[in-house]
Length: 302
Image (cartoon, rainbow, N blue to C red; front, side, top):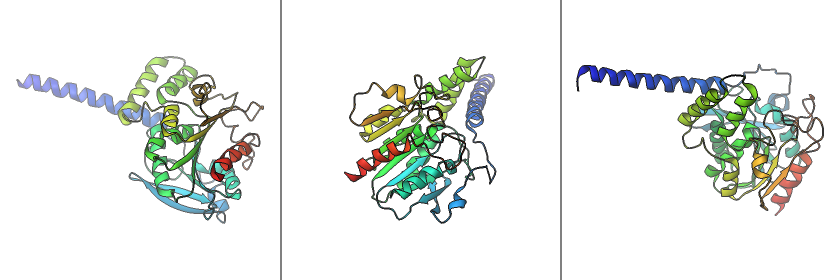
């Protein structure tokens, strides 16, 4: 092999390497968390310092902040996985609600979110961070995972690493798998090159998370065998209830382990409305949350 042939090989390898780097940068750009200021017009954990215990845990090399509401409660441990674009502070009303009902409620921020350092590369990272949280906060009490949107995908696809630790899952406004939600996003939000963008973003996610990219939320639930409550608003404007949603994949499942619920009251049935139906920071969804508590209570009492 001559020098010219070696040069051509190096050029080709360089082009491939550059293409891979560009694909990874696409994921970094697309999934980059929005950085809020210290006061983001909503309550933060520091506002309830007398109700929560702040701590840290490690997820790989990432040091993640967490807050435990009702730290001494023994009824069960609830771990929340937040949605894309919002920090864990958004779910303070839910954590306080469950803490008052006797549960130890854990809120944490994913890698790169809020004040955590690191780069958030994509949805599977949320599942990896959640798996680390499960290991860290397991104290032998019944463990329930609750997730919203991106977090709903995380609470399902983290189950293969969770083993038998998890008693049940509650998934709000979730999607079943990453390839589908990427295609749906491109079709809904882009005017041109929809297929190309979806392909490139999927390729970048596969490069970054080859073992996790094709995980299905429903398949993980079924293989784990834990109970699940799937909630999806009838007017969800971000994840179509009849499209890429976990609800659409689950609705025809005949399983005693899976409960599905679709709120249809106006304002309570949107992507964010299933959690926060009004702009009032402390408001909870009174159509949904009591049903979730009833579901959880029934499992932890057995």
